[in-house]
Image (tube, rainbow, N blue to C red; front, side):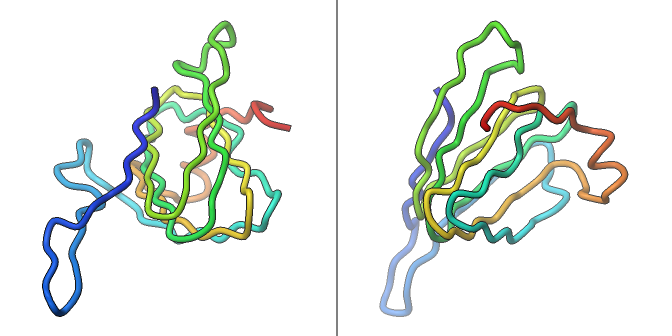
Length: 129
């Protein structure tokens, strides 16, 4: 089962609330990306060799598809990630995101997202068409 978390505030007062998105992440976060997606679009469809990342849905929703270990013998699993939820993708896990509505999410990555290094770290696949 994927790590999907609906995050709750740890402190609430008259000024508002505070919620940990990520605490004690190992390895450390190297990049944080703000990503917008149009309804029906597909992102990812790949496997990372080293990178792992957390995807936190700010608004919208997606169907997150994954195959544990990236092994073609494993079954493809699907979960819906909604606003206020986060999904974790470890290295060597095939994954794809299909957006069910216009959406915005944050991606917290453990590897830097420089174009050449990013492309070296992944293998593109057709997990979702």
